[in-house]
Image (cartoon, rainbow, N blue to C red; front, side, top):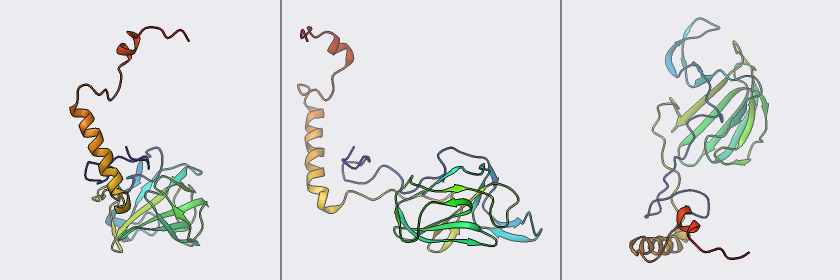
Length: 194
């Protein structure tokens, strides 16, 4: 584990994904999946559904699925209260039908930050969270998309990171240097009298 709390391989590549798969702390039933030919529940017309609807109760905390900057917030007749976040590279996420927006345009957010409460605003048939993932401005199924790894160790930290990796690899290969002490070994030690 690095000082930033994340895990990396010996080359400094992240072992975690750049995005959470779900925009909530708990998983909720998918009430309407990503579908480019969905029959709209209000209009009855065949139209693309560019996101995934989760059947969340009103007031469910909504999380940013990745690090980024809030690029838009607003209230739209169809989308209701919404947030759009621009992420590093070619990624963008959208969160629609919100009850309460808890971020502002231009605000930096981290993966897992609470950004809103889910709701039932705009053209909606009931309480839910509509979540979209866009890659190069094209909507993709957020539950099936190939999620990239998080960023690697910054170049200015690589020398110190590699030195720490080398130290740990030597310790792992040297039986005389304990990396950790088992509880049973600690129980065999004499009492210190403290």
